[in-house]
Amino acid sequence: MNGRILISGASIAGLTLAYWLARHGFHPTVIERAPRPRVGGNGIDVQNLAIDVVERMGIMPRVRAAAADVQGMKFVDARDRAIARITLPTGGVEVMRGDLVAMLHEITDAEYVFGDSIRDLSQHADGVSVSFDRGHTRRFDLVVGADGLHSAVRRLAFGPESHFIQHKDHYFAFADAGTALGEDRWVTMYNLPGKMAGIYRSGNHPQAKAYFIFRSGPLTFEHRDVEQHKRLISQAFASEPTWRIKELLAAALADPGFYFDALSQVRMPSWSSGRVALVGDAAYCASPASGAGAELALIGAYRLAGELAAASGDHRIAFSRYEDAHRPLVRQKQQIGPNVRLMVPKTVGGIRVRDAAARLPLMRAMAAAERLMRAKGSMRLPDYALA
Image (tube, rainbow, N blue to C red; front, side):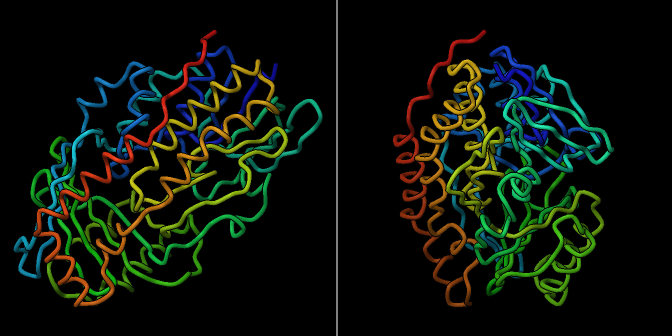
């Protein structure tokens, strides 16, 4: 029942869903706007129940081998002198997004359609007619949007994204930086009031990453207009002469993989509408500040596939069970706490207070305690019989 399932998006949520659907005997098709699996990206955390999902997929040893091996964060002054360091608590594994996507793509048995995207959806009693940008139309039993914060599937099946996206008063960008920048195995952060520029330096990757965050109310921009994104970052940082901002900015603006977006969350009353459902950031983006995007995507995709299998493909039962089981974790992870305020204090005084607090053992103890409490609050991962 409902064996033919179209998944929009070939990133972590979409590929994980396709993997488990295939294992349960369904026939997934993955469509992706990009011409190939996306490489690059930032560091992401595989933690808590997400570790169980990856272990059940058989790739946890490879994930650990590809770990970014970042020890922690350090805050610096304009002369690049370390003011304070916070060592990251252990427990999960941080890996570069592109590395995990490549592993998931390699092990997933699905039909792939790259370089195309969904143009329109039309639901019927027994299926969904899907038209694509390339002009052809196909029919599927179910459609799942795993296409991120700016989901086309969500827009077509649920309404404009303005109904569901909550802006969190910040914008961020990341891109490749010079290979010699930054201290190995550390995230280096430099603050100005309401702004942060940083360098992410993995222990297992030669390429450093430049990060930028700035506070702002809602800005009007097209999420696919990269040149517009670069202008916004330039307007925010080009006039800042201190630290290594000019050097980082020049490298970031020259990177074809430059990425920019608002710090936002997605909050929806329901993640399904008829034969269409959502998974990952498309349904419940917690924002990069939560550090939980990959965790929610991996667990959510595993649950959605498992519930479809447990319900013998009956989407009316499966979608409801998936949502009931996954919402408590989503609510927990969307409570992002003081993370952004610590990274981007609004004032000079706030920066000084943050730096002083970061030098205290209490800050490290609080970070470790928060990670431990979240792990303890996690529910057990369910077992679903495979086909």
